[in-house]
Image 1 (tube, rainbow, N blue to C red):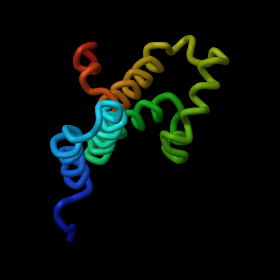
Image 2 (cartoon, one colour):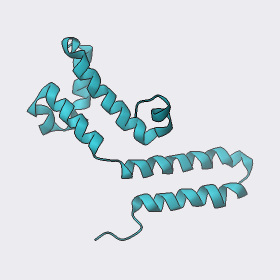
Image 3 (cartoon, rainbow, N blue to C red):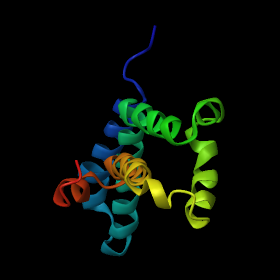
Image 4 (cartoon, rainbow, N blue to C red):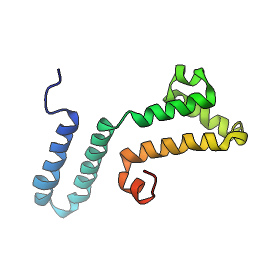
Length: 124
């Protein structure tokens, strides 16, 4: 059984305290650093809370491109392999499939690092 609050909630409490209680009392020359720390906390919260659906979709697309080898090694292990294959032109005849995989990766990363941009760009 998990204890409450969970990690994402603790990060939110820390971020809110930093922004609402500490930042107003910091000298102006320290605001940028405090805001960067608050942004890092927000990214960490989203990463912890991230939906596993994007990872599963990416894994399914990798399986389509590489078969069982991708499923056995995992998505992260296949990233370098995929990049080498792109450079070598191995997907020139399957650009739509490979492009779909790359867009899934871009969406997954942006949903954590910069969800506002994801929405503005119409990629969500």
